[in-house]
Length: 445
Picture 1 (tube, one colour):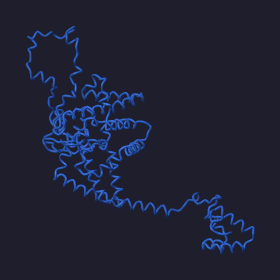
Picture 2 (picture 1 turned 90 degrees about the vertical axis):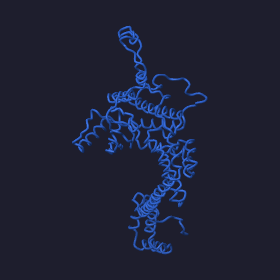
Picture 3 (picture 1 turned 180 degrees about the horizontal axis):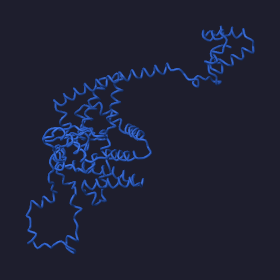
Picture 4 (picture 1 turned 60 degrees about the horizontal axis):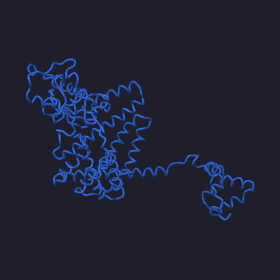
């Protein structure tokens, strides 16, 4: 996992974090890593970690006690700056209005039996109102953005619930501690409408359930939870890859040969192609096209692959649902200058595919030669009667060996006629049981 840390308006550090940090470390550990590195380089003006925080480039603070895997994306740009006083929206609304004088307002003092004692509205303090988002994207419809964020929350919650269910089955102290950690992280994210109430109209004749894209995401969450079981991760990945191919390979082949101006609507209608598995299938598809001599089709598929990969990368960098990145991407890529740049990248990538196809063909040829030249084991050589033809051949009289080597049936018959009947029957039985001689295999005798 990589992150880019900025300070004082400049990129100050590129940090490559160990994979285990995503689950075992908090955002504060990244801050400590940065401050330690910065102070080594700037001993005259050291930073005081107590006054610092980590922010997104938009200025949104990232909780220092949040898990790295939950709060930060791979290749994300982070800003290290002084902590800022954060005021909740509801508090700010009060501060913007008239502040009554508590000493002369006539409001009752706190105490047993007072209004504040009877009603506690604390659970509403951190409510995340999905219909009142403030960070809308200029190129995305507001209603669509609200729906995408809601689906993202639901997906994250489903993944957590699947992990919690698995941990409850284990029932160990470690599992209990992990459940508490997950619930704690969930609480830090703040409440949303789903935490406070459930409606009975989510699945009606109009809204018949999850979209195909959402189903895929939930299936992935279930597979992630299954990694903690006795099922091998390789088996899970292989099954996922196979299932995706069976369901959506036809879409991938159609998309691979499309013109760029047709792709936006196609992907919006079939967002199932916005999966890592799709990118893997397209790589294999391109390689097969090149090995079949279809270079023109391979180059077109290479361009389509790069567009698909760019959409996925854009969604990761912006921490958005991949579907939210479709229209902004095509708005840019269909410009003449951007399309020319994409074509250059396509040529470079297609050349790599072409070289890989040459190497793959050489590897396959070498494997075939190795298979043809490989010496058979004794078990593989055994004839129909259970004898080894090599051992039997070495035991034959010299004249009989020469007759077999010459493949001359008349010479073989003459050698047999010169033997006693007992010897002839013995040697011919040996040859039949070892497979050196097949009765009725082309001779009249």
